[in-house]
Length: 155
Image (cartoon, rainbow, N blue to C red; front, side, top):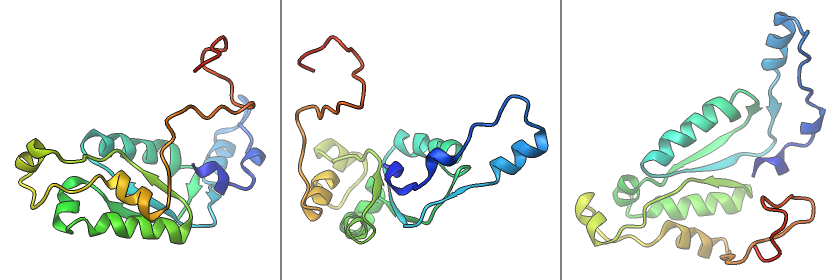
């Protein structure tokens, strides 16, 4: 998702094995500046843990970016009467890029488990409708992206 925002990512070089510690430290502090804000839609349960790990290890050390954070965890969607979902989609329209983590679409059991005020709609559906998006049920095949199993003719 972020690759479209990084104008000169190819210019960043991997340090040679013989680089000095001072040189490596200088390179590590040289972050790539992302020009536009990125909407972050945090999710539920283990997604939050894994996403935090990904940000801390793979994104923040290398990118200088402005995050517009929205907590789409089920307790916060309930507390805001699901307004946070609409606000996150509207922010996506404004900034043109978002990262969304997995969220729970509550069923009757989850309404009881989380003591929810309502059985909220799917955040994916809400966001998709606001963005005028669609669901792809077929693989999107690109010639420049190798297939995991090259012999498959009908993935």
